[in-house]
Image (cartoon, rainbow over all chains, first blue to last red; front, side, top):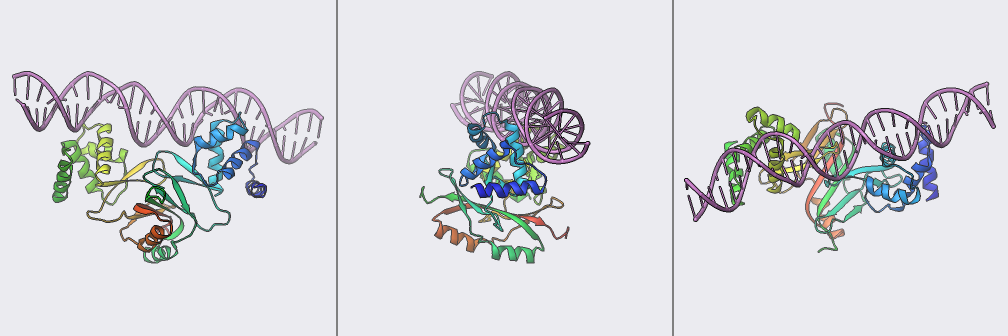
Length: 144
Length: 144
DNA sequence: TAAAAGATGATAACGATTCTCATTTGACAC
DNA sequence: GTGTCAAATGAGAATCGTTATCATCTTTTA
């Protein structure tokens, strides 16, 4: 945990941003909820517990900054709010999601799975892939 | 075109909805811009040309209705607006998108490509897939 | 023709996000 | 240390896409 914060701190400094207490508190919340898919409001509520003076705008600004630095990914499951998902350190590709239409749960798939598909797309459509988003909607193992 | 409208009309009737002039004008706009990915506002502007009295709320209601009937798909490329995409008639699966990070263009891939991946997900994660969304972000053939 | 149900248009309300701006903080020069 | 200046913050206003409300209009049914 501390090491990851240290690395994120360095990453910020390398672009001449500072790891302010507010930003650190926000990053800690994200690290502590790595498996969840928190909305900005969720993050705000959780950060407030350890840093009550923080403002909602600062949380938004921090999440935007972390997205820019590719520390988190901003994702959208079509429910009207953006969610923020910590990137796996060193992950070449963005992971995929399984959204259950029964219970609303969101599970992650860390495996790539798309290598072959990407090769086809790059070749056949002459499209240089930089990132991808893959989400499956269906019924999760718990609801079956 | 007329045949497709006729089929959509039947589909509406089968659920006891009517194809009002406003709805028909909206469907026509969607058919005429099949390759685009229009936002509700885009559709509103275009429908107004052929039916100036129409209200924005009606357009939203119609798009919602068409989404429910699976005539269109509501998609989101992360730019803060929902876009509406006509389904290919009889398509078993939702098509994929190539979003260019240079020029913003959106191209479509009608091929499935995910058959193998879906089999893996269904088996390994015990997840019953009902639908999927796959979007690649990168540089399109025109911008390379 | 009357009554009921369905659809519409105008506009108000809403919720998520961004913007504005006065204030505070932190890094660096002296 | 002290002063300076850019960066960051917090509060709340503003914005923007979307949804809800409600009176009016249309269509269907009796």
